[in-house]
Length: 74
Image 1 (cartoon, rainbow, N blue to C red):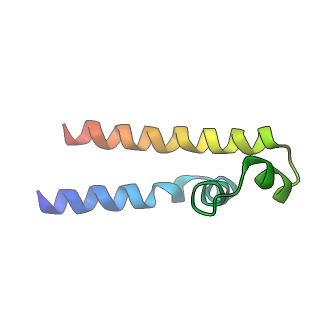
Image 2: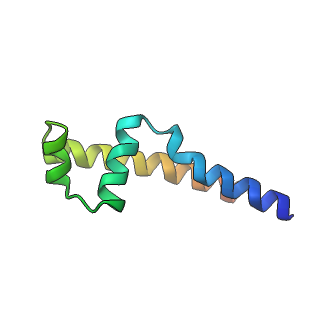
């Protein structure tokens, strides 16, 4: 059981690696560095809504990964 728990934790930790590099960067800027969507858009030479699109689509990928983990555990 303990081994399974470590395996699941590892899977969650590597999930962001499955994201495209730009989306990983944007997620880090938004959630960890606390940049605004507007600031992220300016960094990448895009509008705020494009930054939001990348954040939203990355969160959908991460959500799917978490749902898979939950179904595997049950």
